Image 1 (cartoon, protein in one colour):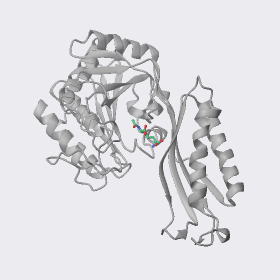
Image 2 (cartoon, protein in one colour):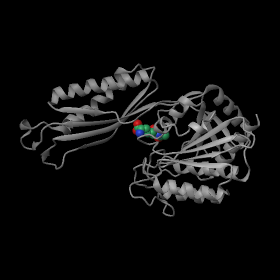
Image 3 (spheres, rainbow, N blue to C red):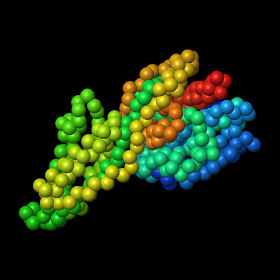
Image 4 (cartoon, protein in one colour):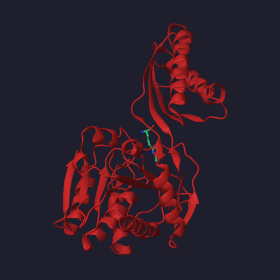
Amino acid sequence: MTVEELIALRRQFHQIPEIGFKETKTQQLILDQLEPLMKEYWSIKLWRTGVIVYVAGSDPKQTLAYRTDIDGLPIEENSGIEEYASTHKGMMHACGHDFHMTIAIGILSQYSAHQPKDNLVFIFQPAEEGPGGAEPMLAEGVLKEWWPDQIMALHIAPELPVGTVSTREGLLFANTSELFIDLKGKGGHAAYPHTARDMVVAASHFVTQLQTIVARNLNPLDSGVVTIGVIQGGTKQNIIAETARVEGTIRSLSIESMNEIKHRIEAIAKGIEASFECELTIDYGSNYCQVANHPKLTQEYMDFAEADSEVTFIEAPAAMTGEDFGYFLEQIPGFMFWLGVDSPYGLHDARLNPDERALAQAVSHVTSYLNWKMKK
Ligand SMILES: CC(=O)N[C@@H](CCC[C@H](N)C(=O)O)C(=O)O
């Protein structure tokens, strides 16, 4: 595919963001793109809203996989780009999955023109932002007949310049858990607080107390995050709220600290129940295991990237982002790397505007890596 075709395709994906397991138009667009590339050595399988492409090698000794996520986020786009902004109100590709998919199709187009020596598997995975597609996909045995020996994935990095790739051995992304808490008290007239149990006040104390967990309970040499992204409660300014809801996410560098954070959240919730005479119900939603890069394969990739004159390699620090690609890495050796896309606005920001020059650069870099792996 030419640079112009890659950019046009990314813009098409960008216009139709869909949230987890609702990616029906996205799935159709992927299939429409694959159709003219199809060869007799290709097979395609659907799984829910995902797509898996198997490219049989001419003289296979191994099976190499590349995974891309396909879902968007519930964010109202504010990028200021009129030409190809999201046409789905309240939804946006604000985490680069439009880039990830386009790059996957760009790489596949290379193996439509030439049959690879080894087998390749391309996984277009739904619901990365939640509730998680990787874990059920693996549990349902979707990859069983095409089981890879190695897997890779990339993620756009707005803070890195185009032409930069970055990763590290071992832990790249954190363990994550969603957090949903419902508070139930007693509503009433604003003028009679003594007759009610105010859940706006209870939720405010709860959110404030959560801030002590990382500061006071985790070992300072360890690290964690408790972020509350949503707080809702009440119906009118002069009515005491009977219920409230708090939504957030927890991040940790180990399972032990994840358990410790959850234990502290539960203890604080009990304290709020006692002090505000209310009920708190905790739901941890979906949990993702850490993204742990395979030491030997990552080192091999980093050596390759350092020698590739088309990119600049930078060693990455571990990040508190989460990714259900970690579930693939639990079962298949491999790695994830960051791809520089140079945007002043970060991931999950309504103004995210990645530099499209990164598309062709990534297609070329990953294809060179796969070809190099197949020659070894
Ligand atoms: C790369 C990235 O931004 N990933 C998301 C993953 C979401 C995990 C889960 N739904 C949660 O909110 O805990 C991230 O927020 O890091």
